[in-house]
Length: 523
Image 1 (cartoon, rainbow, N blue to C red):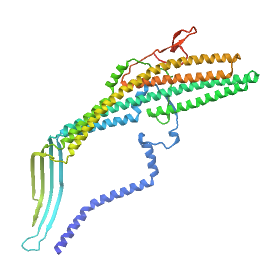
Image 2 (tube, rainbow, N blue to C red):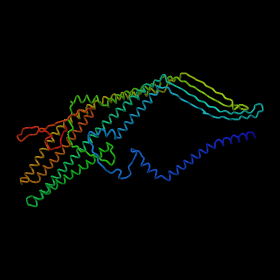
Image 3 (cartoon, rainbow, N blue to C red):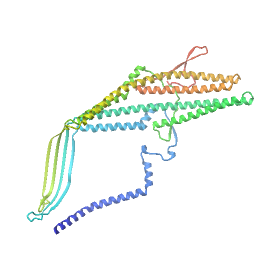
Image 4 (cartoon, rainbow, N blue to C red):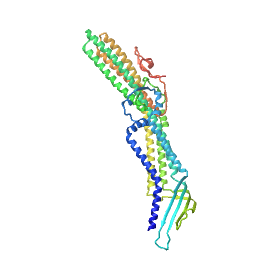
């Protein structure tokens, strides 16, 4: 027993002395951790400030009013929208990241064609020491003292893997689908940006119309007050003029709010800085005419719509997933080569171990490994049927989407024709309203009519000018939508003409450029 205690004390002393460097290192780490925690607790405010200064732009949240207040204005043209969207829009960048993600998954699936190398080291190195004591005098006590290391390398390669080809095909189709999704969302965002651009144009023009109406109403009110003070007019005419001025002021206030909303809406989709507001210098005008028939537009939409290609990829992906699910119940064959090397210095279970004794071992094993799940409870067959059903669903979705595309093209095409006629009709209405207002003013100054007729004609002119601007904006929006749906830019400069009766009662063709209205086209 004394020998046992002495041995135990010696081993314990060696163990504690061997841990001293490790304990010193650990204590230093613990001490450094405590210092870090103490510094972080005392300098918490400074760390928060550094985070605000060094935080990424995408994760930064403004905390002061001056950071979100409008400081400057940026002029935006229609032809600049695409470049700004590609560079700034966050949704576009999200879909680009998804393309990179599916590309990485494809590379991961392609790795199944290559062999795999595994390296394992057990006890690199390790030291083993033990003492065996026997109470019987026939069996002597033994000891073990040995340093050893063991390294094993294994190379495996799947010769037959039924799931490999369908998994790679599914990953490749998913990668192509992500690129289609990027193209679809890019075109949709470009279309939405154009719509917001046109709406902002419309708001700007409507503000100008409201300003002109306010000027006319102010002049009319001044004339009515002069006539009333001179005893020519009546109090009713003054009140009617004040009422019309108040209505025009309300119209101006509404359109001014629409302008601010349109500016911030355009800034949001372009992802401009929060202290910048976009402004538009161009006027509302017809961007062109669609130079393609309805039938050719439908064919072009079929050929250029990534949505249909994406659905076809869904069919292929589901079929590949079905084959991969079925492959789980098929045999798999791999070639495996395992190389093992071991080294030992010392002896085990000897009366007096020789610590200088060395021994080594090297072995290499090569063979074939096969696995085959004969029965899995119907799991693979159920997954196969599920994916096949998803493929059939995608086929039905393809036919449904094709019908929706034709219906959408037809609706936009017919609305575009109606919008073109509305432009001509509203243009004629504006000319008639202007002439009616001019004649009403002459009649009012001559004392033939009352202020009521002037107010009514002025209101008609304002409404007709607003309807004209709405008609042009609607036409441009439909034209951009048709270009998006067909994937074509078949828009050529236009020279829309309208027919209006002349003084002799005959129809004459008037070029819209010759009027003092907003120009319709830009050649």
